Length: 564
Picture 1 (tube, rainbow, N blue to C red):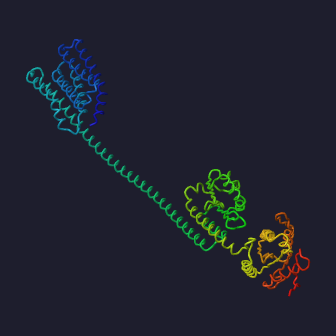
Picture 2: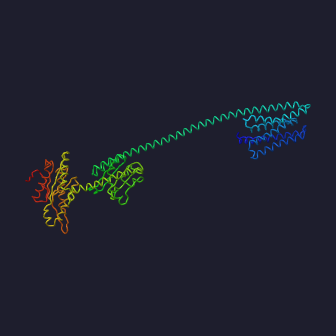
């Protein structure tokens, strides 16, 4: 039973109580003062009982300590008893029966509102207790007042009691059925709510499970992707290590490394720059891979400047995200959002630049270990190449001039001739000798002569390198220059320009200024020499012809020169 609901209902009904009290008092007073045959004593008793009921309601209304169902039931029971007493003992007094009957109906209703409708035995007991005053009063009247209509009064009271009892039983049964239906509906609703809650819980668990499965799926995909990337990285590193172990050619190693990075990481661009004279290389080495149009040349034009700027700033590594286009103006018109730049260093020596870029943002936050491993291998390759080239240099280069010696030239010339024949191309050879070199030694000393030889060698090598040729010190003061893929008509202006350059040189040795002069013989395959084995011989013939006919000149082979 909901006590708060009962309290609210009974408090609201007190207003009806008060209205009935007022009507009852006016009604009784009207009977008293209109000359009706009523006893003043009866009026006073009735009004006193009504006043008691009014006082009970007032106390009940204003004091919270009556918030107890047993107290409520007791108060209403007392009011029912008072009403039945009034009905029994004053029903005969001049038309007050209806008012008393109204009060007893009102009190009975309030009394049963405060009951638990399931407790039928208690309700029956309460009904019997309330009815006892009526029965006792009726019997007393019957015994003492049979002569003045008491029997009629008995039947009237009995009918009232039966009506009230039947009404109470009917209302009790109706309320009991209603209560049971409410309980059943409430039970069904609770069961339905429980089932709904179970369904909701199942749905939430399924949702949570699906979320966890999706997370696990995502994690698994990420892990698989990482494993795949790790495998690709290990394969790439193994390939690079294998290649490094087989080659000392830095350009090829650089190509292998850059291509491996592009294959594994799929970047927007990857570039490596090695400055000159790192592994005895005469020129800077660039390797750049990108699918972005016109970016390759822009990167090449800017890498040396980036290297120099980082050296000046004392920065060995940079990762740029937010201001890529502002920092690297050559990237302004391309979609590159992540750039990683790192100076190449081995044993404390900085020798180049490694640069990566891509359109993906924050790409290099946690993926640098692969590049660290690659660059470590790169450093090893550079170190190995340097050692190897230094050994080769000692074996291949002339000790005085630093250009190719005759032993290495023989092998280099043989390989070049084979390539020329395979490609059905051409080859020009110039052999020249320093004029009156013996007199230089005799006049200025052998050390001065060495300086003249070194000057001739350095100028010749630097000049011929521009045309992808090579030179060597062929003898004491003799040199040979080879121009692959150059016909005689192309090679002749080159040699003439070299001749002018050499003859304009002045060697300053101590207090002397030593001028230089050379005699040159030039021939070509296959225009003049049909047999490549005759190239050096005919170039030598032409050179001696020039020396014998006045020196300081170029003699171009026309096929007619012979020498015993």
